[in-house]
Image (cartoon, rainbow, N blue to C red; front, side):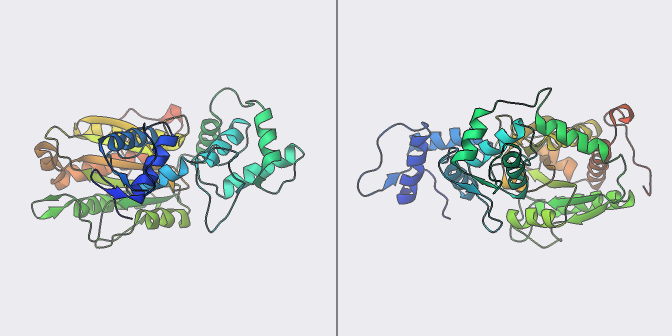
Length: 374
């Protein structure tokens, strides 16, 4: 779709403004009879506010991801029948609310990501069976009434956290046989930031290759979402990880920014900012970021919840790791050094292994070394 930005006009802008008004983020009347909207300063501010609240990249423009999020925000639970469609899964705030209610009642509906997938259908059918409803996997009026009549049943922590943490402990501490998908950012025509003769796409591919070798030596099955020249879409990258039934997904990036002060290491995991998140993803994001910081001395930019498709569409714990800013002279000098990239690779491998270690065996950050050969 055409990206909508300040200065854009037309029916698409009017549609975006109508959603923003419905969400009480934009004041004023609806567009005139012509249906032609003007993307003015107030609209840009409303879009930025929406992006911030939804965990999207905040740029004040409406691209595919923001437009899709706006469309999903239209729906409240009860507005429509919710039914699993494997070809075109329903997406929306109503789906996320359904998932949250099921999780609060102790049913495994997957994570509350607003996508009605097979896990959500299974959790919904289990709820319907337990409460004497027709277990057809469709959330209609009767199911909705039952859900609203019941209070929160799971106590002692978030149900997702309890379930995911238990699963992690039960899976054991080893890496042998674990499936890990590494995603070197950019690729193909999208080269990312250029530093001299080297592109961001080349550097993250080199970094991913270094991580791949170390994890494979430890016994893990490691796949890269692209080769040196490929450039798959975000949908293709996440589909690849899902098809591989990965245990972990890590997207590697190096950032760039117009600000002369932007530098450091940040990590991102799936989360809405309202409590729904990938708990294991959050744990891994913190581990990976802290390991890189401890071993490189780079600036710590923290871990953050985001709803980017690269994190949301994957069915396993997923993290994006930004390893520094090529636009900053200090970070760029470090990242262009192959020895520093090897150090980052070592940090990533250490964080992967630490994710599966029990608390009593987990070493201090920056000290763990994986034995050569696994």
